[in-house]
Amino acid sequence: MLFISETVHAAIADILSTTPSLSSIVKSNPIQGRLRVVCLAILHISQSFLTADGTVHGVLGHDITLNNCPPNLRHLMSELGAIGGIVEKMKQEDEDAALALSYSLEDAEQDLGSDDSFELNLESNIERLKKRLIGEAGYRESLTSEPACVRDVEGRIGRLGKHVMSLGSFKEREDIVFEILVGVTS
Image 1 (cartoon, one colour):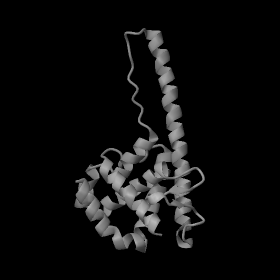
Image 2 (cartoon, helix red, strand yellow; image 1 turned 180 degrees about the horizontal axis):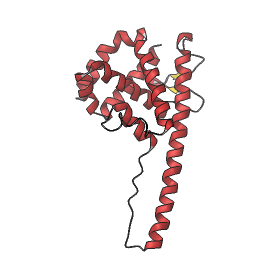
Image 3 (cartoon, rainbow, N blue to C red; image 1 turned 180 degrees about the vertical axis):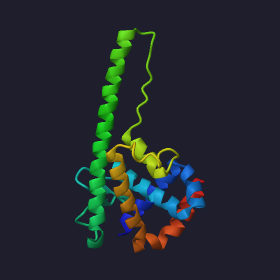
Image 4 (cartoon, rainbow, N blue to C red; image 1 turned 135 degrees about the vertical axis):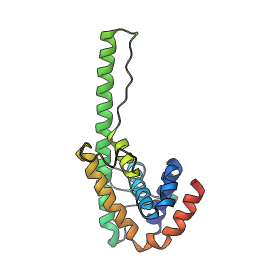
C-alpha cells in the first residue's frame, strides 16, 4: 500500500509544481482544491506512469500491478487502467485531428500562396479535460458544449479521486502532504 500512496503523493507534487495556481485554490478552498489536485494527479498517473497492460510504474522503481495490489484496492486499480485506456484513445484522437487539420492548412496555404499563412490553434480534448479538472473559468460551465468523451472521463476521474481521498491510508497523511507540497510550490 505504501508505494500506491507514495505514487499518488509524487503525482500530486508534480501537479502542484507544474500548475502553481492550484496552490492558492487549495489554500482558499481546501476540500475542493485538494479534490482537483487529486483528480489531476490521477490524470497524470494515467498519462505518465501507466503502461498499456495496466501496470503503474510507481515511485522508487516499484511497479504496481492488479495482482500485487491489495484486494480492497483492485477495483481502484482497474478503474485507473480503464481511465488510462480512455485517455490514451483521446490522445490518439487529438493527434489524428491535429494532423488532419495541419494537412488541411498546408493545402489551403498552397492554394493561397506562400505570403498568406494560417495559425494552427486546436485545443485538444486532453487540454480541455485538464482545464475542466482545474476549474478554469468557462470550462466548468460549458458542460453541454464539451465532447462526451471529456465529460465521461472527467466524471470517472472525479469519482476515483473522491474514492482515493476517502481511503484511510490517504486520509491519515493528507493534511501533512498537502501542507508541505502547497508550502513548497507557492
